[in-house]
Image 1 (cartoon, rainbow, N blue to C red):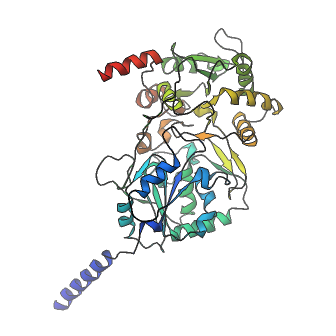
Image 2 (cartoon, rainbow, N blue to C red; image 1 turned 135 degrees about the horizontal axis):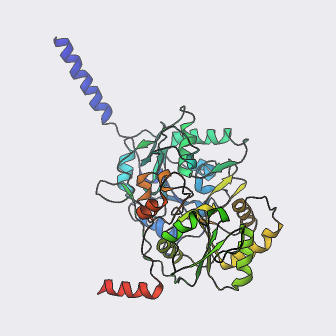
Image 3 (cartoon, rainbow, N blue to C red; image 1 turned 135 degrees about the vertical axis):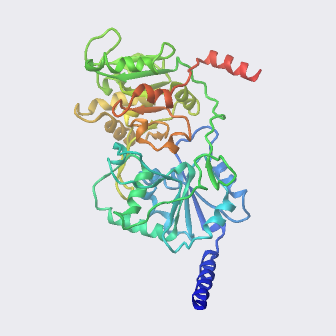
Length: 446
C-alpha cells in the first residue's frame, strides 16, 4: 500500500514538472504575416500596421505583407503558395498569420507560445467547423477544423517545414481551385489524417470581446471618407424569363428598392428588362455610361445584397479599386489567376468596364463569364481586391463565428434555405441616400 502511494506521488511530481516546461522565446523569433490586398481600404497602411506591433516590444519584430513582400506569387492570399518563398531563409520559431484588422497582444502571444516546442508540429487558431456539407468545401462530410483568419493563427517551424514538403509534392499537379483559403490550408495540413490538425484556442478571438483574448478582430470603416451616392452606383442583375415570376419578386421584397438604380437583364423582351450575358451587360454600360456611373455592380437573380453595407465599403475605395471573389492558380504560385464569382456580386469601377467591354469581344460565347473576366484582368495588370463580406453561397454554408465578425454584404443562391429569412437575419439594414444619411447622423450627434 505504501509503495502504491509513493508511486502516486512520484507520478504527480513528474506530471507537474512536464506541465511547467517553458521554451525560450522572444518576439523577434515570431514572424508576423498580414494577409493583405493589392489595394487596401482607406485608413489601412502597411507602415501603420507594422508600427502597432513594434510599439509593443523593445525587440525587432519581423513583419511581412502578402500584397508587397510576396507580390510575385500568384494566390499569396491563400498562404501556402508563399511557403517556399523568402520565409525559408528566416531564423524563426513561429509564423503568425492575420488580417489587416486583426489586433494582437505581442507580449502575451510570446508568453503563450513559450509553452510549446516549435520543433514539434503545431497549428493553433480559432477553430471553425461546418454545420453541414457545403459546396464551398467540396461537400465534404468530414468535420474538419479550419482557422478564422480574422482571429489570427500560428504554425510552428516544424509545421512550416512539413507544409513546404506537402506543397512540393503538389507542384506537378494541375491548377488548384480555391474558394475558402483557410479551409484549403487546413485540408492541406491535415493530409488525409496523416498531418497536422488545427488546435482550437479560445484566446484567439473573432471579436476583442474580453480581457483574456490574445487576439481579436476589430472591424472599423470610420476612417473611410469617400463620397458615394445612389446616383454613382448601378446594379445590373442577370436573369431569364423562367425566373421573372419567381426570383425577381423575392429581390423586390428584399434589397431592390426605388432608392437605388437597378436594371434587370434577361433573354426575352420585358418592360423592365433589357438583354443577356455579362459581355452584353458590360458593352451596354460602356455605350450609355460615359462615366455616368462610378461603380457597376453585377449580380445574379438569386443574389441577396445589403445595399447599405455595400455603399459603406465603396466609400473606403476610390474608383480605381476592384472587387473579386473566387480563384485558381498553380500549386507553387507561379501561374493561374484570380477571378470574381459573379453570383456573390462583383463591383467594377467605370474605367474597368470600358476596358473589359473592349477585350471581352474576343471571348468565346461558351467561355465562363467570371473566369474570362479574371483572365483578362490579370493579363491587363488590373488588380482585383477581395472582400470577405461577399459570399458565393447561402449563409447556412458558413460558420456562425465567421458571420458575426463584420457586416455581411452578399449571399448567393436561394437553394437550401429561405432567402427571406436569410436576408432578414444577416443583410437587412435601412439604406439612406446621402442627404438622408447626413440628416440621420446630425440627429444622432444631437
